[in-house]
Length: 442
Figure (tube, rainbow, N blue to C red):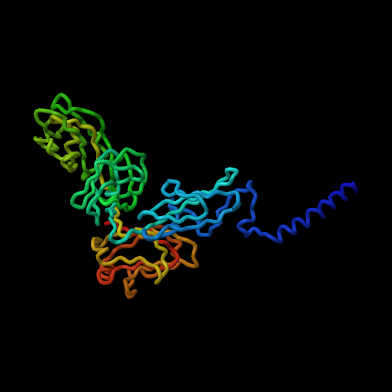
Protein backbone atom coordinates (compact mmCIF):
# COMPACT_ATOMS: atom_id res chain seq x y z
CA UNK A 1 0.00 0.00 0.00
CA UNK A 2 2.81 2.42 0.98
CA UNK A 3 4.64 1.50 -2.18
CA UNK A 4 1.52 2.30 -4.24
CA UNK A 5 1.12 5.75 -2.59
CA UNK A 6 4.76 6.61 -3.25
CA UNK A 7 4.38 5.61 -6.86
CA UNK A 8 1.28 7.78 -7.25
CA UNK A 9 3.03 10.77 -5.66
CA UNK A 10 5.94 10.48 -8.03
CA UNK A 11 3.54 10.31 -10.97
CA UNK A 12 1.77 13.50 -9.86
CA UNK A 13 5.05 15.32 -9.37
CA UNK A 14 6.14 14.26 -12.82
CA UNK A 15 2.92 15.21 -14.64
CA UNK A 16 2.09 18.49 -12.88
CA UNK A 17 5.03 20.57 -14.17
CA UNK A 18 4.34 19.34 -17.66
CA UNK A 19 0.70 20.44 -17.43
CA UNK A 20 1.61 23.84 -16.00
CA UNK A 21 4.19 24.47 -18.69
CA UNK A 22 1.76 23.45 -21.40
CA UNK A 23 -1.15 25.63 -20.32
CA UNK A 24 1.06 28.64 -19.74
CA UNK A 25 1.90 28.78 -23.46
CA UNK A 26 -1.50 27.96 -25.00
CA UNK A 27 -5.21 28.20 -24.33
CA UNK A 28 -8.40 26.91 -25.88
CA UNK A 29 -8.78 30.33 -27.52
CA UNK A 30 -5.67 29.77 -29.61
CA UNK A 31 -6.74 28.66 -33.15
CA UNK A 32 -3.70 26.40 -33.31
CA UNK A 33 -4.19 24.87 -29.84
CA UNK A 34 -5.16 21.50 -31.30
CA UNK A 35 -2.23 20.34 -33.39
CA UNK A 36 -2.89 16.62 -33.37
CA UNK A 37 -3.94 15.02 -36.65
CA UNK A 38 -6.34 12.81 -34.73
CA UNK A 39 -8.37 15.83 -33.59
CA UNK A 40 -11.64 16.72 -35.28
CA UNK A 41 -11.27 19.74 -37.62
CA UNK A 42 -12.82 23.09 -36.74
CA UNK A 43 -13.53 26.18 -38.85
CA UNK A 44 -13.00 29.14 -36.53
CA UNK A 45 -14.33 32.15 -38.52
CA UNK A 46 -17.03 33.92 -36.52
CA UNK A 47 -18.92 35.03 -39.66
CA UNK A 48 -19.37 31.37 -40.61
CA UNK A 49 -21.40 30.76 -37.47
CA UNK A 50 -25.20 30.77 -37.48
CA UNK A 51 -27.99 28.52 -38.65
CA UNK A 52 -29.96 28.25 -41.89
CA UNK A 53 -33.26 30.17 -41.97
CA UNK A 54 -36.20 28.32 -43.56
CA UNK A 55 -33.72 25.92 -45.14
CA UNK A 56 -31.72 28.75 -46.78
CA UNK A 57 -28.04 29.30 -45.88
CA UNK A 58 -27.00 32.80 -44.73
CA UNK A 59 -25.31 35.26 -47.08
CA UNK A 60 -21.55 35.42 -46.53
CA UNK A 61 -20.76 38.21 -48.99
CA UNK A 62 -22.50 40.50 -51.47
CA UNK A 63 -20.22 41.98 -54.14
CA UNK A 64 -20.28 43.51 -57.61
CA UNK A 65 -19.33 41.32 -60.54
CA UNK A 66 -16.31 43.60 -61.09
CA UNK A 67 -14.93 42.47 -57.69
CA UNK A 68 -13.24 39.16 -57.01
CA UNK A 69 -14.65 36.94 -54.29
CA UNK A 70 -11.99 37.06 -51.59
CA UNK A 71 -12.08 35.18 -48.30
CA UNK A 72 -9.79 33.45 -45.82
CA UNK A 73 -10.65 30.68 -43.37
CA UNK A 74 -8.87 29.72 -40.15
CA UNK A 75 -8.91 26.02 -39.33
CA UNK A 76 -7.48 23.71 -36.70
CA UNK A 77 -5.47 21.48 -36.60
CA UNK A 78 -3.87 23.84 -39.10
CA UNK A 79 -0.94 21.67 -40.14
CA UNK A 80 -3.05 18.58 -40.76
CA UNK A 81 -6.11 20.10 -42.50
CA UNK A 82 -6.86 20.73 -46.17
CA UNK A 83 -9.49 23.29 -47.16
CA UNK A 84 -11.45 22.84 -50.39
CA UNK A 85 -13.95 25.27 -51.90
CA UNK A 86 -17.03 24.29 -53.89
CA UNK A 87 -19.14 26.85 -55.76
CA UNK A 88 -22.49 25.66 -57.12
CA UNK A 89 -21.36 22.09 -56.53
CA UNK A 90 -18.09 22.41 -58.47
CA UNK A 91 -14.66 22.12 -56.85
CA UNK A 92 -12.94 25.43 -57.67
CA UNK A 93 -10.07 25.88 -55.23
CA UNK A 94 -7.90 24.36 -52.52
CA UNK A 95 -6.23 26.31 -49.71
CA UNK A 96 -7.21 28.58 -46.83
CA UNK A 97 -7.62 31.69 -48.99
CA UNK A 98 -9.61 32.24 -52.16
CA UNK A 99 -9.48 35.12 -54.64
CA UNK A 100 -11.42 34.55 -57.85
CA UNK A 101 -14.00 36.23 -60.12
CA UNK A 102 -17.61 35.01 -60.17
CA UNK A 103 -20.39 35.58 -62.65
CA UNK A 104 -23.35 37.68 -61.56
CA UNK A 105 -26.02 35.79 -59.66
CA UNK A 106 -26.51 33.91 -56.40
CA UNK A 107 -23.90 31.23 -55.76
CA UNK A 108 -23.92 28.38 -53.26
CA UNK A 109 -20.56 28.19 -51.50
CA UNK A 110 -19.40 25.15 -49.54
CA UNK A 111 -16.14 25.24 -47.58
CA UNK A 112 -14.86 21.81 -46.55
CA UNK A 113 -12.07 21.19 -44.03
CA UNK A 114 -10.60 17.66 -44.09
CA UNK A 115 -7.80 16.27 -41.94
CA UNK A 116 -5.13 13.80 -42.98
CA UNK A 117 -7.13 11.19 -41.04
CA UNK A 118 -10.23 11.83 -43.15
CA UNK A 119 -12.17 13.73 -40.49
CA UNK A 120 -14.28 16.47 -42.06
CA UNK A 121 -16.42 19.52 -41.30
CA UNK A 122 -17.98 22.08 -43.63
CA UNK A 123 -19.87 25.36 -43.86
CA UNK A 124 -22.42 26.31 -46.53
CA UNK A 125 -23.18 29.93 -47.37
CA UNK A 126 -24.47 32.09 -50.22
CA UNK A 127 -22.43 34.62 -52.19
CA UNK A 128 -24.43 37.30 -54.02
CA UNK A 129 -22.77 38.85 -57.07
CA UNK A 130 -24.63 41.88 -58.39
CA UNK A 131 -24.70 42.59 -62.11
CA UNK A 132 -23.90 46.02 -63.54
CA UNK A 133 -26.85 48.13 -64.78
CA UNK A 134 -25.94 47.57 -68.45
CA UNK A 135 -25.30 43.82 -68.16
CA UNK A 136 -27.63 41.36 -69.93
CA UNK A 137 -30.50 40.54 -67.59
CA UNK A 138 -33.15 37.84 -67.69
CA UNK A 139 -36.83 38.15 -66.74
CA UNK A 140 -37.23 37.60 -63.01
CA UNK A 141 -40.77 36.23 -62.73
CA UNK A 142 -41.12 32.63 -61.56
CA UNK A 143 -42.77 31.40 -64.76
CA UNK A 144 -39.94 32.69 -66.95
CA UNK A 145 -37.39 31.00 -64.71
CA UNK A 146 -39.13 27.62 -64.75
CA UNK A 147 -37.69 25.27 -67.40
CA UNK A 148 -39.51 22.07 -68.32
CA UNK A 149 -37.15 19.35 -69.55
CA UNK A 150 -37.58 18.51 -73.23
CA UNK A 151 -39.60 21.62 -74.10
CA UNK A 152 -38.74 24.77 -76.01
CA UNK A 153 -38.49 27.88 -73.83
CA UNK A 154 -38.52 31.59 -74.72
CA UNK A 155 -37.42 34.14 -72.10
CA UNK A 156 -37.29 37.94 -72.23
CA UNK A 157 -33.81 39.45 -71.91
CA UNK A 158 -32.65 43.05 -71.67
CA UNK A 159 -29.35 44.62 -72.78
CA UNK A 160 -28.77 41.83 -75.29
CA UNK A 161 -28.00 42.26 -78.99
CA UNK A 162 -26.63 38.83 -79.89
CA UNK A 163 -26.42 35.37 -78.31
CA UNK A 164 -24.13 32.48 -79.20
CA UNK A 165 -24.66 30.05 -76.31
CA UNK A 166 -26.68 29.52 -73.16
CA UNK A 167 -25.68 27.23 -70.29
CA UNK A 168 -27.92 25.82 -67.54
CA UNK A 169 -25.44 24.94 -64.87
CA UNK A 170 -22.69 23.30 -66.91
CA UNK A 171 -25.06 21.87 -69.53
CA UNK A 172 -25.31 23.72 -72.85
CA UNK A 173 -28.81 24.32 -74.19
CA UNK A 174 -29.49 23.45 -77.83
CA UNK A 175 -31.16 25.34 -80.68
CA UNK A 176 -30.38 28.69 -79.07
CA UNK A 177 -31.62 31.75 -80.94
CA UNK A 178 -32.27 35.43 -80.18
CA UNK A 179 -34.97 37.61 -81.72
CA UNK A 180 -36.97 40.64 -80.63
CA UNK A 181 -35.68 40.63 -77.05
CA UNK A 182 -36.28 36.90 -76.49
CA UNK A 183 -33.79 34.05 -76.13
CA UNK A 184 -35.31 30.76 -77.31
CA UNK A 185 -33.78 27.34 -76.66
CA UNK A 186 -34.56 23.68 -76.04
CA UNK A 187 -34.30 22.64 -72.39
CA UNK A 188 -31.81 19.75 -72.22
CA UNK A 189 -32.32 16.47 -70.40
CA UNK A 190 -30.65 16.87 -67.01
CA UNK A 191 -31.36 16.17 -63.32
CA UNK A 192 -34.13 18.27 -61.81
CA UNK A 193 -32.95 21.11 -59.57
CA UNK A 194 -31.93 24.76 -59.35
CA UNK A 195 -29.12 25.89 -61.66
CA UNK A 196 -27.39 29.17 -62.57
CA UNK A 197 -27.84 30.45 -66.13
CA UNK A 198 -24.87 31.71 -68.13
CA UNK A 199 -25.42 33.70 -71.33
CA UNK A 200 -22.64 33.94 -73.91
CA UNK A 201 -23.00 36.89 -76.25
CA UNK A 202 -22.01 36.92 -79.91
CA UNK A 203 -18.61 38.41 -79.08
CA UNK A 204 -17.87 35.66 -76.55
CA UNK A 205 -18.53 37.52 -73.28
CA UNK A 206 -20.08 35.46 -70.47
CA UNK A 207 -22.73 36.86 -68.13
CA UNK A 208 -24.41 35.26 -65.13
CA UNK A 209 -28.17 35.74 -65.22
CA UNK A 210 -29.36 34.23 -61.94
CA UNK A 211 -30.91 30.86 -61.17
CA UNK A 212 -33.63 28.81 -62.84
CA UNK A 213 -35.63 25.77 -61.78
CA UNK A 214 -35.36 22.73 -64.05
CA UNK A 215 -38.23 20.24 -63.73
CA UNK A 216 -40.01 17.44 -65.52
CA UNK A 217 -43.29 19.16 -64.61
CA UNK A 218 -44.91 22.16 -66.26
CA UNK A 219 -45.06 25.44 -64.36
CA UNK A 220 -48.08 25.94 -62.09
CA UNK A 221 -49.01 29.44 -60.97
CA UNK A 222 -48.95 29.97 -57.19
CA UNK A 223 -52.40 29.64 -55.72
CA UNK A 224 -53.53 27.30 -58.51
CA UNK A 225 -54.50 23.68 -57.92
CA UNK A 226 -54.37 21.16 -60.77
CA UNK A 227 -56.07 17.78 -60.42
CA UNK A 228 -55.87 15.06 -63.09
CA UNK A 229 -59.21 13.23 -63.21
CA UNK A 230 -58.47 11.08 -66.27
CA UNK A 231 -55.29 10.00 -68.04
CA UNK A 232 -54.86 7.62 -70.93
CA UNK A 233 -54.31 7.30 -74.67
CA UNK A 234 -57.51 7.27 -76.74
CA UNK A 235 -57.83 8.07 -80.44
CA UNK A 236 -61.17 9.89 -80.44
CA UNK A 237 -63.46 8.57 -83.21
CA UNK A 238 -67.07 9.67 -82.59
CA UNK A 239 -69.24 6.84 -81.34
CA UNK A 240 -66.52 4.19 -81.56
CA UNK A 241 -63.90 5.70 -79.22
CA UNK A 242 -64.65 8.42 -76.68
CA UNK A 243 -63.84 9.29 -73.08
CA UNK A 244 -66.72 9.29 -70.61
CA UNK A 245 -66.60 10.89 -67.15
CA UNK A 246 -69.44 10.02 -64.81
CA UNK A 247 -71.14 12.34 -62.34
CA UNK A 248 -69.10 10.63 -59.60
CA UNK A 249 -65.85 11.33 -61.52
CA UNK A 250 -66.82 15.02 -61.61
CA UNK A 251 -68.30 15.27 -58.10
CA UNK A 252 -65.42 17.34 -56.69
CA UNK A 253 -65.17 19.75 -59.62
CA UNK A 254 -66.50 23.16 -58.49
CA UNK A 255 -68.47 25.57 -60.64
CA UNK A 256 -66.05 28.10 -62.10
CA UNK A 257 -63.16 25.65 -62.44
CA UNK A 258 -61.36 25.24 -65.76
CA UNK A 259 -61.50 21.90 -67.54
CA UNK A 260 -58.25 21.33 -69.45
CA UNK A 261 -58.09 18.75 -72.27
CA UNK A 262 -54.56 17.68 -73.18
CA UNK A 263 -54.40 16.09 -76.63
CA UNK A 264 -52.37 15.31 -79.74
CA UNK A 265 -53.53 15.92 -83.31
CA UNK A 266 -53.29 12.81 -85.48
CA UNK A 267 -53.48 12.43 -89.26
CA UNK A 268 -57.13 12.36 -90.29
CA UNK A 269 -59.54 13.58 -92.96
CA UNK A 270 -60.75 16.24 -90.53
CA UNK A 271 -60.55 17.21 -86.87
CA UNK A 272 -63.44 18.01 -84.55
CA UNK A 273 -64.20 18.25 -80.82
CA UNK A 274 -67.52 17.96 -79.03
CA UNK A 275 -68.22 17.70 -75.29
CA UNK A 276 -71.70 16.45 -74.58
CA UNK A 277 -73.56 14.15 -72.16
CA UNK A 278 -73.98 10.37 -72.20
CA UNK A 279 -76.91 10.28 -74.64
CA UNK A 280 -75.66 13.23 -76.75
CA UNK A 281 -78.78 15.25 -75.87
CA UNK A 282 -77.13 18.34 -74.28
CA UNK A 283 -73.81 19.87 -75.26
CA UNK A 284 -71.31 21.28 -72.77
CA UNK A 285 -69.01 22.41 -75.61
CA UNK A 286 -70.82 22.49 -78.98
CA UNK A 287 -68.99 20.87 -81.89
CA UNK A 288 -65.81 22.64 -83.00
CA UNK A 289 -64.73 21.77 -86.55
CA UNK A 290 -61.14 22.50 -87.55
CA UNK A 291 -60.04 21.44 -84.08
CA UNK A 292 -56.43 21.15 -85.25
CA UNK A 293 -56.27 24.96 -85.21
CA UNK A 294 -57.31 25.21 -81.52
CA UNK A 295 -54.93 25.78 -78.56
CA UNK A 296 -53.38 22.76 -76.90
CA UNK A 297 -54.34 22.14 -74.18
CA UNK A 298 -57.94 23.12 -74.91
CA UNK A 299 -59.71 24.72 -71.94
CA UNK A 300 -63.30 25.59 -71.08
CA UNK A 301 -65.12 26.79 -67.98
CA UNK A 302 -67.13 24.37 -65.88
CA UNK A 303 -70.21 26.59 -65.60
CA UNK A 304 -73.32 25.98 -63.50
CA UNK A 305 -75.09 24.78 -66.68
CA UNK A 306 -72.22 22.40 -67.48
CA UNK A 307 -72.34 21.01 -63.94
CA UNK A 308 -76.11 20.48 -64.16
CA UNK A 309 -75.69 18.52 -67.41
CA UNK A 310 -72.83 16.41 -66.01
CA UNK A 311 -74.62 15.76 -62.70
CA UNK A 312 -77.56 14.33 -64.66
CA UNK A 313 -75.82 12.29 -67.38
CA UNK A 314 -72.06 12.69 -67.09
CA UNK A 315 -69.65 14.19 -69.61
CA UNK A 316 -68.71 12.58 -72.93
CA UNK A 317 -65.61 13.90 -74.70
CA UNK A 318 -65.90 12.99 -78.36
CA UNK A 319 -65.12 14.20 -81.89
CA UNK A 320 -62.63 12.99 -84.50
CA UNK A 321 -58.97 13.22 -85.49
CA UNK A 322 -57.22 13.72 -82.15
CA UNK A 323 -55.75 11.61 -79.35
CA UNK A 324 -56.94 12.55 -75.82
CA UNK A 325 -54.23 11.97 -73.18
CA UNK A 326 -55.34 13.83 -70.07
CA UNK A 327 -58.24 15.70 -68.45
CA UNK A 328 -57.17 18.17 -65.76
CA UNK A 329 -59.24 20.34 -63.45
CA UNK A 330 -57.69 23.74 -62.69
CA UNK A 331 -58.98 25.83 -59.80
CA UNK A 332 -57.80 28.75 -57.73
CA UNK A 333 -57.21 27.88 -54.08
CA UNK A 334 -55.50 31.02 -52.79
CA UNK A 335 -54.49 34.45 -54.02
CA UNK A 336 -51.29 34.26 -56.03
CA UNK A 337 -48.39 36.34 -54.73
CA UNK A 338 -46.47 38.76 -56.92
CA UNK A 339 -42.91 39.56 -55.89
CA UNK A 340 -42.14 43.29 -55.63
CA UNK A 341 -38.61 42.98 -54.25
CA UNK A 342 -36.24 40.15 -53.35
CA UNK A 343 -32.79 40.20 -51.79
CA UNK A 344 -31.07 39.94 -48.42
CA UNK A 345 -30.87 43.27 -46.58
CA UNK A 346 -30.01 43.64 -42.89
CA UNK A 347 -32.36 46.42 -41.80
CA UNK A 348 -30.56 49.07 -39.69
CA UNK A 349 -32.69 52.22 -39.46
CA UNK A 350 -31.22 55.03 -41.60
CA UNK A 351 -28.15 53.06 -42.63
CA UNK A 352 -29.75 50.13 -44.40
CA UNK A 353 -33.39 49.93 -45.56
CA UNK A 354 -35.49 48.79 -48.52
CA UNK A 355 -37.27 51.48 -50.53
CA UNK A 356 -40.08 50.83 -53.02
CA UNK A 357 -40.99 53.73 -55.29
CA UNK A 358 -44.47 54.68 -56.46
CA UNK A 359 -43.62 53.02 -59.80
CA UNK A 360 -42.60 49.80 -57.99
CA UNK A 361 -46.02 49.77 -56.30
CA UNK A 362 -48.08 50.86 -59.30
CA UNK A 363 -49.70 47.44 -59.81
CA UNK A 364 -50.66 46.95 -56.16
CA UNK A 365 -54.42 47.58 -55.79
CA UNK A 366 -56.14 49.00 -52.74
CA UNK A 367 -57.21 46.09 -50.53
CA UNK A 368 -54.24 43.89 -51.48
CA UNK A 369 -52.17 42.17 -48.80
CA UNK A 370 -48.48 43.08 -48.64
CA UNK A 371 -46.22 40.37 -47.22
CA UNK A 372 -42.79 41.07 -45.76
CA UNK A 373 -40.60 37.95 -45.58
CA UNK A 374 -37.79 38.17 -43.04
CA UNK A 375 -35.25 36.37 -40.86
CA UNK A 376 -34.42 37.35 -37.28
CA UNK A 377 -30.66 37.39 -36.51
CA UNK A 378 -29.16 38.11 -33.11
CA UNK A 379 -29.48 41.82 -32.21
CA UNK A 380 -29.86 44.11 -29.21
CA UNK A 381 -33.50 44.63 -30.13
CA UNK A 382 -35.88 44.11 -33.06
CA UNK A 383 -38.26 46.67 -34.55
CA UNK A 384 -40.24 47.20 -37.77
CA UNK A 385 -41.52 50.44 -39.26
CA UNK A 386 -43.01 51.05 -42.71
CA UNK A 387 -43.03 54.73 -43.62
CA UNK A 388 -42.47 57.00 -46.62
CA UNK A 389 -39.25 58.33 -48.12
CA UNK A 390 -38.85 61.26 -45.73
CA UNK A 391 -40.23 59.39 -42.69
CA UNK A 392 -43.11 61.87 -42.37
CA UNK A 393 -46.11 59.48 -42.69
CA UNK A 394 -46.26 55.91 -41.41
CA UNK A 395 -47.93 53.06 -43.30
CA UNK A 396 -47.19 50.64 -40.43
CA UNK A 397 -46.28 52.47 -37.19
CA UNK A 398 -43.21 51.21 -35.34
CA UNK A 399 -43.53 47.72 -33.88
CA UNK A 400 -41.03 46.95 -31.11
CA UNK A 401 -40.39 43.34 -30.15
CA UNK A 402 -40.60 42.39 -33.82
CA UNK A 403 -38.77 39.11 -33.07
CA UNK A 404 -42.06 37.79 -31.66
CA UNK A 405 -43.68 37.96 -35.12
CA UNK A 406 -43.55 35.15 -37.68
CA UNK A 407 -42.57 35.49 -41.33
CA UNK A 408 -44.20 36.78 -43.44
CA UNK A 409 -45.52 39.88 -41.72
CA UNK A 410 -48.70 40.89 -43.58
CA UNK A 411 -50.60 44.17 -43.71
CA UNK A 412 -53.41 45.58 -45.84
CA UNK A 413 -52.60 48.10 -48.58
CA UNK A 414 -55.36 50.54 -47.68
CA UNK A 415 -56.41 53.64 -49.61
CA UNK A 416 -54.44 55.73 -47.09
CA UNK A 417 -51.35 53.56 -47.55
CA UNK A 418 -51.62 53.86 -51.33
CA UNK A 419 -51.94 57.64 -51.09
CA UNK A 420 -48.77 57.82 -48.97
CA UNK A 421 -46.84 55.51 -51.32
CA UNK A 422 -48.07 57.26 -54.48
CA UNK A 423 -46.70 60.50 -53.07
CA UNK A 424 -43.37 59.47 -51.57
CA UNK A 425 -42.97 55.73 -51.94
CA UNK A 426 -42.66 53.11 -49.20
CA UNK A 427 -39.62 52.73 -46.93
CA UNK A 428 -39.28 49.46 -44.99
CA UNK A 429 -37.04 50.13 -42.03
CA UNK A 430 -36.45 49.23 -38.39
CA UNK A 431 -33.69 47.25 -36.71
CA UNK A 432 -32.58 43.69 -36.04
CA UNK A 433 -34.07 41.74 -38.95
CA UNK A 434 -33.05 40.72 -42.48
CA UNK A 435 -35.64 41.49 -45.17
CA UNK A 436 -35.60 38.80 -47.88
CA UNK A 437 -38.73 39.39 -49.97
CA UNK A 438 -41.71 41.73 -50.42
CA UNK A 439 -44.81 40.39 -52.19
CA UNK A 440 -48.46 41.30 -52.63
CA UNK A 441 -51.57 39.18 -53.06
CA UNK A 442 -54.81 40.53 -54.46
